[in-house]
Image 1 (cartoon, helix red, strand yellow):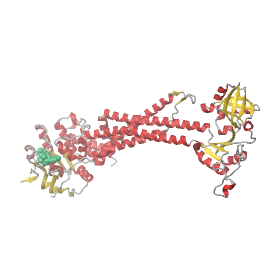
Image 2 (cartoon, rainbow over the protein chains, first blue to last red; image 1 turned 90 degrees about the vertical axis):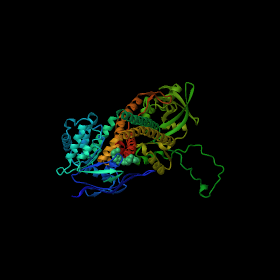
Image 3 (spheres, each protein chain N blue to C red; image 1 turned 45 degrees about the horizontal axis):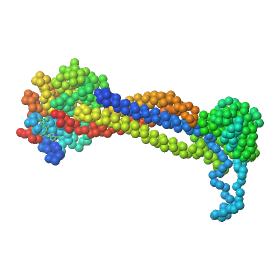
Image 4 (tube, protein in one colour; image 1 turned 120 degrees about the vertical axis):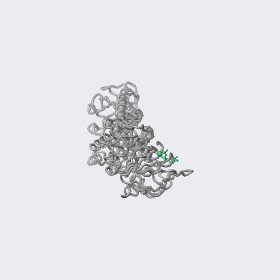
Length: 225
Length: 415
Ligand SMILES: Nc1ncnc2c1ncn2[C@@H]1O[C@H](COP(=O)(O)OP(=O)(O)OP(=O)(O)O)[C@@H](O)[C@H]1O
Ligand SMILES: [Mg+2]
């Protein structure tokens, strides 16, 4: 089985008076349907790696191939399009648009993609919220919901365009035990031969890491064995 | 791609509404700019139009006189480069226009308008022992209504009353007042040539312009010729062009065909018209400045919003929203402020113009008047177009900055 994501010779150096190396040469794959956990000490470069895999950042050297497409030469518009079509993001902070309801937030990526009509978008947004146990909260704004609920809305939004890869950066970092367990099982359920999505999750949480198919430990911007 | 517009509009609307107070300040800024621009334009152009109309009404559109643009060449000039001529006495008689009726007949063949002859003479009007200087115009009452407003400016009596008695005269209202003469009175008219005749006042004219009403008197052509001491004299043909703006072109054709100097009203008032042009230039400069200041307000608001919404911009861009969508969101917000401001500004401008039109002014030089306001759609269109363009530009720079934002910079900082 060929990998969904292939990273080769990945480096990211921040320019400056003293250049900072965030990622110092990483080769890694993410397989289709795989649940991969990225762990490591604080400041080791886990988030930085995730941004590179998620095409939010551009590597200083190396190549990220997603679904067979090399991305280092793509311009910003093409990378944005690829994010919209094949990637979903969940961050530690929910990052929802504050003036929009849960339903509208989930609908955003679908409206931006423009493949479905408005009715279909509304229906799918609602279904996603229901599947994450938020059927009753569809019309609430983010500030009217709990942290766990918001994070689930963010997960629903990440799933909106049925991405092949979901990238999550400490998705349970701000949640209580109950919400954490809920989020872990949701992420876990996305992967597997049935649904075929891959999930890459950066986490400090042993419970979450324990659920992963594979773990990648990062120390000082490199994979440590 | 066009499917993006509902999304762009709904996001822009939410942003605008979430900053309602600032938005209203911006809207009022634009509205005041547009409103004052419209009002100023309607007053300035209204007064200009009014002035030009009075000018055009009180003077012939084209005046053909017995002067020539170039003095006729002396026979000696044709032989020598320079010539000194001795012993010439200037002719005492005014030359007049030769064959005026033939020329008029020729002009009437093609002229887009009408033509009438007149004779000018300076005179003193004596009544009850009081002398009042007057400028006498000999006219043809049959033709006069075609070239001037005089027939409509007769207060008591009519133009045709000039035929009533052998020496009839119409006095300007101010002149009649100065002389103390009334209809039916007999006045003595003494011309600069020394010739005098007694005339009966048959009507009073009132143009509403003090300068004219205090100086003018009208008689039949033949009466004026007697005063001038030259039978058959016609020293001016006055032309009324059907299209006032064509006067210049018509004048130059008349001049080419007759050889006499034909002066259009534009030429006669070149200085005034160029003063108007200067005035309009200043007006549009001031108006543009007002609208620019208003658009600074809009720029400020959009900049503030993009700052406050940095995180939202990062979210949208991280999800994969193209940069142009982000840019359009903020340009649209700026345009929304512009459009609301402009709608309110149009209303404000209309109301202020209307209000100005109600104020009455008294002037020593004219009858009491109201400000001549014109309601021209073009003023609204220009102010609107400038305001809208300014708001697009005001929104463009913050929007471009917002669109260039790298989401990873924000996300990195937030987590
Ligand atoms: N803008 C920046 N300028 C300079 N250094 C930076 C910047 N952003 C990140 N770094 C540094 O890069 C390194 C990697 O940061 P990164 O956020 O990827 O770590 P992390 O593994 O996600 O840490 P954490 O577990 O605390 O989230 C850190 O040492 C951090 O201090
Ligand atoms: Mg991190």
